[in-house]
Amino acid sequence: MKFTFKKYTLPEKMFVMFVYLFLFLFGLACFFPFLTVLARSFSPEFYIQQGQVIIFPVKWTLNAYQKVFQAKQIVTGFKNSLFVAVVGTTINLIFSFAIAYPLSRKRLPLRRTFTVIVVFTMLLPVAIIPLYLLVRSLKLLNSLWALIWPYAITTFNMIIIKNYFEGIPESLEESALLDGAGELTILVKIFLPLSKPVIAAIGLFYLIYNWNIFMPAVFFLTHPSKYTIQVVLKDIISQQMLADMLPYSISMLQQSAGPQGIQSAVTIITMLPVLVIYPFIQKYFTSGLMLGSVKG
Amino acid sequence: MDTSKRTRAQSWKPLKSLKSLQREIAKNKMLFLMAIVIMVWYVIFRYVPYYWNLIAFKDYSYRLGFSGSPWVGLKHFKDAIADVEFRRVFRNTVIISGLKVFIGFPVPVILALFLNEVFQNWYKKSIQTVIFIPYFISWVIYASIMITILSPTDGLLNIMLRSMGKEPIYFLASTEWFRPLLIVSEITKNSGYFTVLFMSALASVDEEVYDASVVDGANLFQRILHINLPGIASVVAIVFIVRLGQLFMSGFEQVYALYSPMVYSVGDIIETYVYRQGIVGGRFDYTTAVNLFGTMIGFTLVIITNYVSKKISDHGLW
Image (tube, rainbow over all chains, first blue to last red; front, top):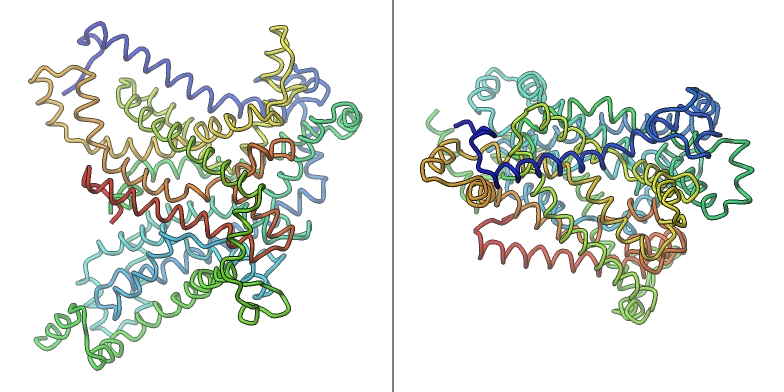
């Protein structure tokens, strides 16, 4: 059945028009701020402070970006974030598949016990202070590994993989087992090729999670040489808020260093990896993969 | 072939003798080993910290370690309840999280129902894309964007205020504005995620039900209320329960990125308080007690809501 606008009665038509307007305004509220920051990152400091940059850059310049790439702290932050994203995601995937595979097989001894142990961690989140003490006693404090090892598995993501694996018929692996193939061979040669869409989707989730990781970085990283880009950006915006509070003393500083443009440029660059990945993420989301896991 | 079938049938029984378990493990050695290796991770990084929550009942000192530190019973909990700052923090947490859930929660439901009524696919797609993006952006980035727009000197809102001849407002340092800003930014940042989730639930509503409703003369409003809304009710209920459980632990990144001492009185929440007292101040035992307090309330809420939801609507987490 296809509904058309023409067939609607007057109140229905008015409602639909309201719907369009409401969605437009909500979308605008979500999107507009991004445009402003983008425009600022390409504009000279002077025009930003004059309040002239709204959605289009005034006097196009790459000045802010050049300064960003010269700032040692910011470049270090990027390198650290990149490390956590790449190494972290690799470990995430290996660990998640290594447990999703056995849990999905009915022949796993003590399967129920393992499942309960794992699922319970979804209901009761781990408290940050005991985790901090653990990280400290493992000598991981102020190490990027502190952002990787305690977060090696996101149980929710792992369950999605497990549910997907459960759909793979046991007859496939049974013949391989009879031929004397090992479990790892079955996982790598049979299961992984069959679950490419899940690997891609979960891999992207982990990638974004690792790039955005913030709270553990605040708690576990103590020295600026280890700061991720998110923490560096937090420092920049803290200075900006301070500058907002003390307009006179800092306004001189603003003119020399141009923190507004730099803040916008760092914001854009930090956001960029997520924006690149986003179209793929959206594809998997709308395909109903996540819904299955929520219902399941 | 016959015997292997029988052993598998036995393995489904909940209670197994040790011997048959041994036999099963021997048969699936590698599979079992994989599970065990990852269980080691779960024990170290999840169950050990669970256990270490017990320092909430101890006078923890670094020198004595976890097991050496003496037990003090409920001392830290009593200290917390007697502490004016904790009471303020607790009140803020309840108010902020409560407003987020009760004002913020219906928004994605409405957005999903609305988007479902859009005829043009391109319009639907572009709105969906635009509102979905912010969910994947970290709170620090989002805070940076907010600070830019709300800046009292060159922020967009204050430029508008000034052009209307009004005094500029420093929103983020204002005790009146801080909480509303947390709620609104939570809505604009995270609604898209749940909207998309609810929309894929809507997509699975049966086409034939629509056809039947038209034959029965149902109008647009009746379709939304009696077909679409019930169609997503189970997913909505589950998401609601999950969010209630996170009531006391979902705001750190947002608040930490946006707050300043000027708005502690209205914006400081349990998690930021734990950070300042625990990590900066070194009071590990006391802050663990504070944290445990919040976790337990969240956990209880989930159990109660799940129970009520199952009674009323038959939908629940378990």
